[in-house]
Length: 213
Image (cartoon, rainbow, N blue to C red; front, side):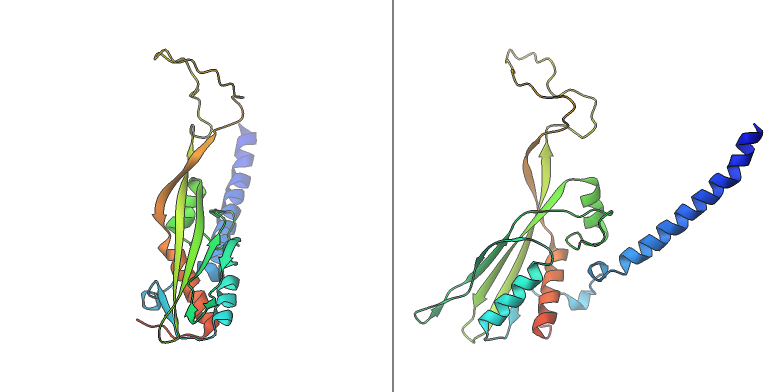
């Protein structure tokens, strides 16, 4: 009993240190550039009009911006074919959603998006369209798709998904029960409009374009 009493102050001090460190980490996380929430007045239309005639400069800045969040899979630049400018398209590989333990990654926005990526298996991929306009400018549309992993069973579940069946169907599949759940596919869960706005805001800053309503 006396030993427990001796340990009580030490445990209290340790808990206080953990709480203090957690608060400091939380403040440091929100001070990161990617974690700064965008004010409502700074939201841009999507697609966003860019009044620039230099298509190569626009495309290079677009690639450099998207590359901060995703790995690019395919590029189809805006090209002049005859007297017509073609539509540009950029696609990325799916990116696993960054969790609360990865504050240096900016694909998961602070708040709901990062909490969801921490508690669920989320991935995102981006598709960007660059459409030439008759006045010499371009419309840039950023679409970030979000998907939820579909698994055979919850992680750490105690229920055997390959238990005895009563429908007369023979299931001869063999799997190590310690291997964990199996990915069956990915379920679309809409778009991440918050990340779309962050990409557009960063691109607008690179191009020096004023916000248009």
